[in-house]
Image 1 (spheres, one colour):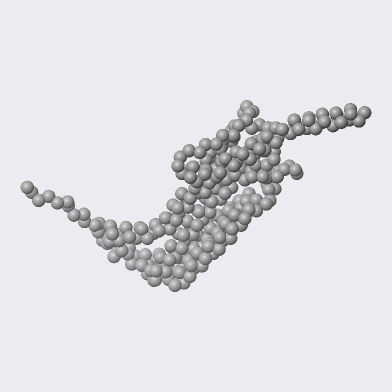
Image 2 (cartoon, each protein chain N blue to C red):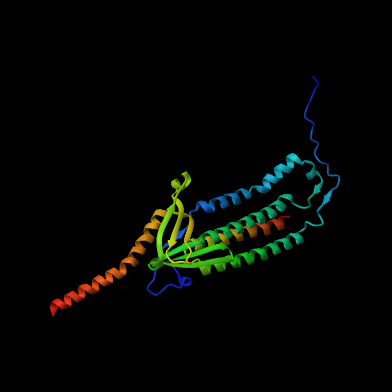
Length: 198
Length: 86
């Protein structure tokens, strides 16, 4: 992986990437799939409700080839719109490193917001899984509450496996929190050892 | 009791004949395809920029890129061939 654009510190690594559950994207994908049948549905509807319209339209050349031409362009249009939506879904992500959470919010294709939250600023992490579908598919909302004033809370909706995400964030938070204590303990032990040798 | 029935809906009549033969020919379809291709090219450049800049070299992005280009080329070939058969 190449995380250059995140501008991480030399000793910093991404340990977790948090994305929304695929169910968010599924609705859009399904609507595009149904959209592929729209020309046939329109044709059948016209045939039933306005049968006279075809009698008055004189199409030149091979009608099947003409239909195929417009239909392939229609599918291409749906294909492009599918990937535009997928890009927004895929690039909307949280990167959890040893030091912080980097929230990359891809609102629209040209609307991108990046926010950092250091672990020492985290006060609490709450998850919210409600409803039958969320429980069965294991997705929910995660809210990271911050301690500092003026620092906004981090919220990511419909996250896949929220329990695991919370566990990792907490373990990193604890490591950061324990680091000064561990350092003080180590220094005290070293001093004690030095006194004993004297 | 009087005989009551739902009135029949008469389909609208189109007394005019739509003559599209002057509009639909090989040249106009090719021009339409070219305009569509320009639109497609711009969108592809935008997507490629996002995938390479922010995709972090993920395998998912590489698969998406390959699939997007492959299917698009296939559909453009179908559209071009249908013009020649038209």
